[in-house]
Length: 195
Ligand SMILES: [Zn+2]
Image (cartoon, rainbow, N blue to C red; front, side):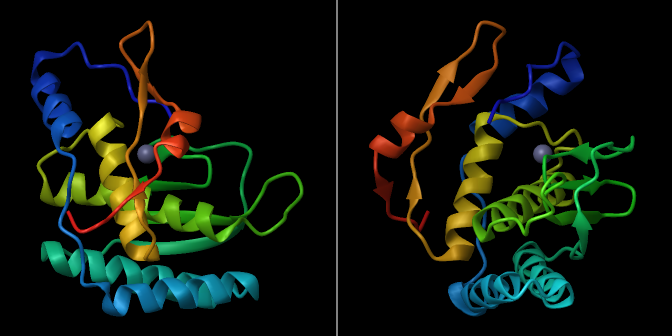
């Protein structure tokens, strides 16, 4: 995972800085969101697209409730397209469209058309939910991928899944971006959630 380059526009610099230094976010109560996550895992095992979509929407509803905002609509689609359209923030397995507050997740890989793993689907959902929260609740319309953004997305993911989060270790790149150093992050071990 790689952060965005810091923006040049002065009006965006403040937002980027705030995003980079905001390491926590409000989390929904563990119940029922942990239950929905477990049901999502079971639905993915069954490759039941409708049930997957339903539990993703339930999780999104729990997160939106904490922020007292409208939940984004989640659509779960089949095989991930190789080409991406404009007007959306693109991720490998999902995207978020500002105008419609819609999150799309693809449950199958493009080449082998295999169902994606539970961890990948849930972390993509949490990543896109963090974009939504940035835009509708945190006055961060550009919703940059900063170190803080990835910290918040990781915190949400582990909270929803009910697993201990890890402290992310970052390597600075030459162009002022940062990349997660996964081996160092994994060596660092898990830390308790509850921020
Ligand atoms: Zn993103």
